[in-house]
Length: 178
Image 1: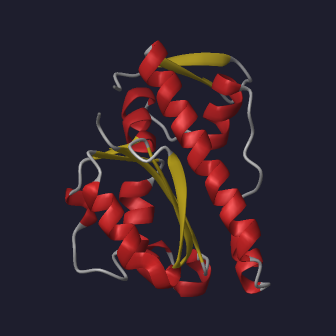
Image 2 (image 1 turned 120 degrees about the vertical axis):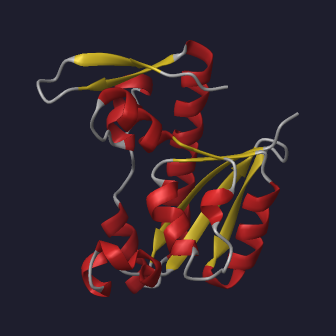
Image 3 (image 1 turned 45 degrees about the vertical axis):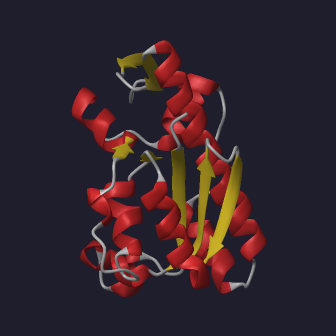
């Protein structure tokens, strides 16, 4: 059985606070969450456990995320000398952007494909970090990992996902995921 590891993280700071999107690694991780198919459960990591998070990602047969190549890995690059982009990775955002020619949001896919919605946004998680509310960040991040997993599993099973275009039309996009 392959160990698919679904992954997402939240940050302590926004891009504006660190000097722009070119300084993602300076945003610092507040909470990271994985779901391992081999383990069959979620794991929550605080900033002090980044090394354990990186080790779990290294043990995965495939890391699956949404914008993890450009964002989540770059945040983690602030903590490790390893180039996480070398890990076997499916970044669903990158794959779908290549297929449809523009970026799709996780929420747009979840809503049109699964009839589920995200519970918050990343900026809310940053506010929770400032307020010392790690449980809310963890719950939000776990739910995003769950949406990522459900969208991936749907795409692997049905070979397509759905999204709504700017006119509100529900469109399908073929995927070739396993």
